Image 1: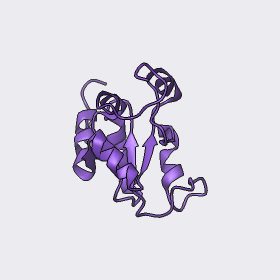
Image 2 (image 1 turned 60 degrees about the vertical axis):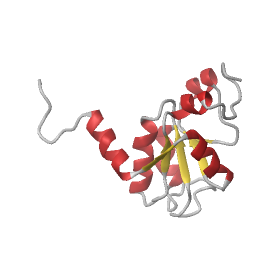
Image 3 (image 1 turned 180 degrees about the vertical axis):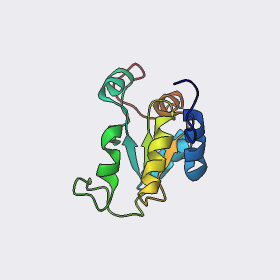
Length: 136
């Protein structure tokens, strides 16, 4: 089939729509929110965390488990999923997948879910703490 089917949207459109519904924050703002009690969630796959390093204290939840781990009504929720008012900051490698993930959490009712602009790479570039990887 050639051409996009009726009603289908491009990934750029999906990303733009997701970002219109969430608040995006800089790495420095994310660090401030974490210091104030927000949960920083690293959704990158293990291979990226091993190669690029990790953020100390971040909760690792790979993308395919995120909604189950943070839905306050899920039997598979994490202890950090204390309710719909939990402040969740999502981190991916470059700040694209995290926007879609934060929007999915928002759809579950976690209205404070946000993501880090530029992702882990921006976190490292800003000199914020990491362990492992080339920046350590």
